[in-house]
Image (cartoon, rainbow, N blue to C red; front, side, top):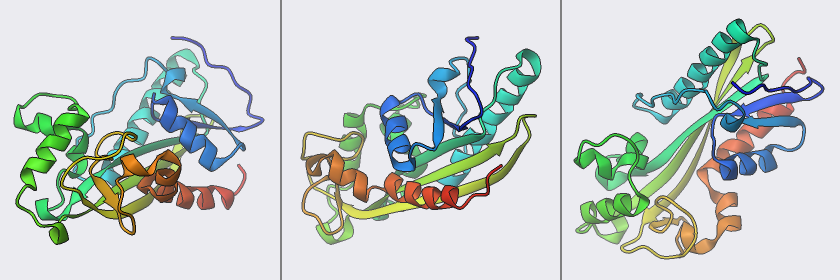
Length: 229
């Protein structure tokens, strides 16, 4: 395992993702008071199965599962530990589908075939449009939901203060995709108060409205008022 070395002059916050874009967004939102780490700093870390039926439970599973692995590595090899672990789970809830795809958002299309793993965005969008083909505009309400799970870890690998921060962005599902940006269901999701999809509004606007931005705003307030340790 590659060594990880950092001083504790700054609080080390491990973001439980290997996605540099997502990690960068989080770092910009939370500010420069942290030393940011990602799963790229811990390439041997296992994937934590998201087996729960809520976003909050899945986010907690990821944070706690990663903490257990870090504790094991610290005990056997002296692996340096972060001070904080941040995990998230998010997805789309469509009212006409009784809240689906929900926690299965990333693998919505794959559920039909029984395949494991995530589905291509295009396949997920096509399935969503097919299921909503007879649903009128006024009943196509939906929301993106994000839950962030924050876990503290001390120098002895003891964890504490598991906290959850939720963000929601209300909107509705369009009849056809539009826009050239974004990812996932962005081409179909039109946030309330707008007439363009997330994919059409652009990243700057989306990041001010998004479910993740709202959850991060709550997290930022908590961290700003968190006692120094």
